[in-house]
Length: 425
View 1 (cartoon, rainbow, N blue to C red):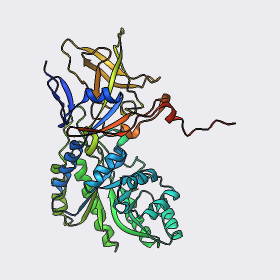
View 2 (cartoon, rainbow, N blue to C red):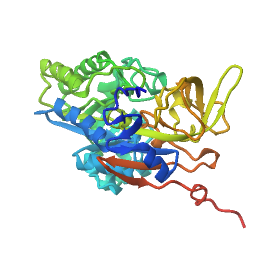
View 3 (cartoon, rainbow, N blue to C red):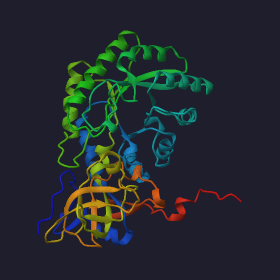
View 4 (cartoon, one colour):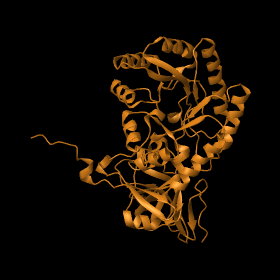
């Protein structure tokens, strides 16, 4: 039998009829650690990062991993050691960065709802920059910084009204989105920031969305941001760095996003043409570094035929893989052992008590109860968005490096899920 090819997963592939992550047979990991189980390829993450590094060769660029994609400490440690900073959106994420050995001075704090406590936490740690997302936030951050006797380094996140042509839930650069300062208000907001004594203007930021698979939206955003930089600096406010965010997509189901080095070759050419090629740049990739580095392993519990649908019921669920329930997102689903024989079309569903608990619809599979499956492209927005709904402990995580597989998160027990709860006397 010919095992299926897995586009976009260079380090997750079949050897004969068995699926491997690098040099480790995935069925062996499932047997040793149980399922559901997240498995990540170190080589995949470093290869994805290397594409960005090639694209930026000879430039002044700081790559800040957008850790909301996957915030496991071992993943953060990997990117810290590879020279990355981090893009965070909460005080908890800052604590994770520091726990993994990261440098707060290489951290950008994004997000529309930073609290005063988070601002104080970040200033105490020596945060690299706040990406400020509203005029009201400027005022509060100024007040907090003055109260601490310091200045907060700030960049204004601009909403350029550019359509990223992605799912509306992960589009962030249109007028109707909650993110950033409106393009038309940008200069006035910078002038206010420059006048506040507790703030120090250091840059400008733009992020238009996630899972972007076309170059066009990026080129549009670059032009709009550079127009703003020109106007802001003409008003006497220096912009030391330009942050173009992240959002580059991955292959889930036949998408063909540009390679990171090819994308940045085009964007840097535009910067050069407009005279900004020598500026300090910041970027915040997340999904494109980790998405196709991970799989979620799951066991087939039952096959349930029906008049309208056949169901393949597995032990992974929407609490482990939230993206299909949230976005109707597609994840490839393949067997760990490619079984010969005729396939049947199934909806692959989990045991959670919700009709939205599905992992894949209308999948042709040759499976039996007890078989093991891999849900592909599970490195981003799966473990980091996982929950304990239905008192299901979060899955264990494994990092594979060549022939070595290391447990990087233990499976949660039921007791772990309610360990912080208190029964009234």
